[in-house]
Length: 177
Image (cartoon, rainbow, N blue to C red; front, side, top):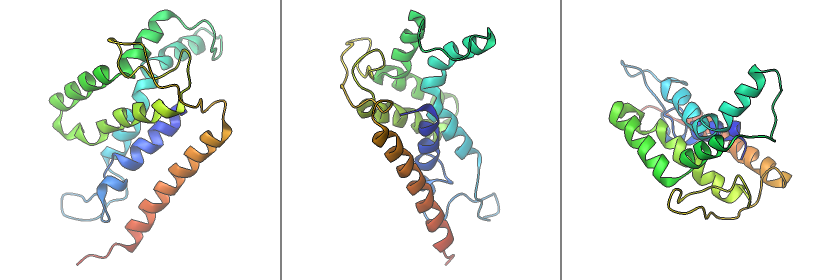
């Protein structure tokens, strides 16, 4: 799916203000409910990381040099970065380093694996197939390219909206005991 979708879904599923916070959601130090906390922004960021750390570099360089965003002429090293950030090994190492560095990141950093697992069925065969087993294998699941199938794109965003609506309903119907 598109990069922004991954951030929104990551925040919905891998943050305390999202569904991971349960019916009550996040609370501050004295027990008051909060609508937003740092895990929301961290999960949003980690949902974007696999694409930002690969294609984002190419697009930023294109914008910086005044070329606009180009999908052609992507350098080979960008595809190596894409393979690293979208493989099980790259995810495991990245997640392990993040959680080892700051244990509190365990929940929001799960948005990274969620991003990759969402890409598996929504990326078709070709340069952007999700290389789950890289560097051991270039093989991947030939899913349905979301950019060629509008129903997948719109369905994903309807799902994202539905998840956030569910969060809102849970928070508004929560009663303290």
